[in-house]
Length: 451
Image (cartoon, rainbow, N blue to C red):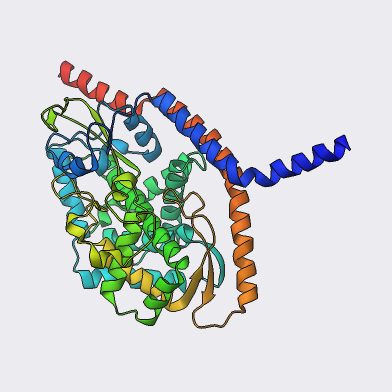
């Protein structure tokens, strides 16, 4: 009797793992990260700065520091290496940043029609080789944006071997960022070597203030890390949301020319699943908030996008594209591309047109369905079932496949959470040991003093 009781209890605990273990492990990982990195700084929204002052503080000219003086910078530099010191997001204000930003704008400057046509061609080439069945949406999207970024930079169709290098690099970066795997610097190095050989083929002049090696790192960081990763993540979230809301998918498929509705779906996806969790900025001067509160120079401001995007909306956790018919986007707590006054995302003019084109090309071919967990961090890479558009599917069979997908995703999450705990702890400790950002600025100060 005792053995049977113990066996039943063990089975019950085992069966319950997907419902409590991942949450517990994530909470433990957060505590470890906070312990290793120290105090996170000033959370915004938070006690000192509410959601109503989020934009004001975010836009303030003194909220302009990017890396120097923040322990978090060491971790982000670690994940983005090689070349984080010339990554556009992490360059400090000054002439060096201004020249890099101009180069990025030149490469991205295309009419919306050309941008959409390019995205459509890239999507068609990748999706033509995709069959029905289970896919991971982030993996499906990554080759599309690899080709898209390559053509923006080089002005020609992306060869297969270059696409493989770009995808391997981008996947390695985002997998490490999600703490689902360690960095593989050999994969990143192979793309660095390729770009070094192709440096003379870039369509536009590169920043002259950068050395040749820095120009390579700039291209890799801006266009083949951030651009490919962020667009793949954005599309994975968008298609995952569409897959889990049949009414939205039906309307998009029935009227693919309805730009206004598709734009609302994209807006809602980016509100509900913002690409950034925390954006940290270091203040270069005091920022007065109100009569009682001033953020002193040197403060590390941690802008929480998910919390800001979830404040001030009715039923904020619900995916509802229709809310953008009732809520003006301009005044809402919604900044998917940052704010104009403080380094907005350089792709803000390119991304919506490109995302529209890829969404239409995907929905023209496939009906999407998914029962997997859809979270902002998307560590499962967006599991989704693809079926040929218009092909009838037995309801019983479709329901069974979705039930199996849900069960599989929950058990994967058990193992994945443990992997994230181990790898994440190792990487945050290794980043603290290497101190890439802190050492870089110390070396600059030492060189300046000697000069």
